[in-house]
Length: 81
Image 1 (tube, rainbow, N blue to C red):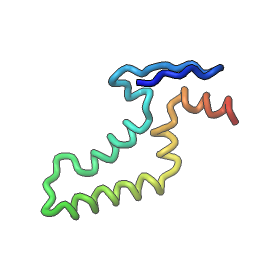
Image 2: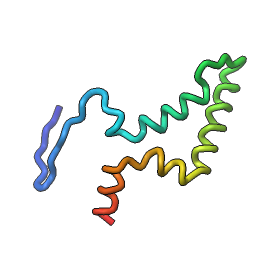
Image 3: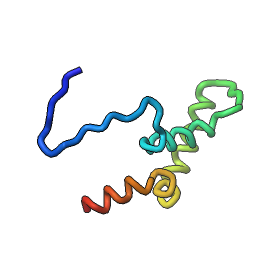
Image 4: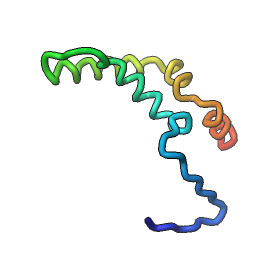
């Protein structure tokens, strides 16, 4: 692994499993629920179920903000904007 120091940047390595630090974990957990405990006749049927869930999530911006807007992320964004 190449390690470079960048002035003014502090690198913090995350623990191997830290979903509270990675909002994508929550998103994909919701996506996985669309196919959990189901048997699909074809892979296309499974893909369709995933696509429907993706569309529903994408169309619900307030829910996405609530699901992915961890307090620490919102604070960091407000500090930058």
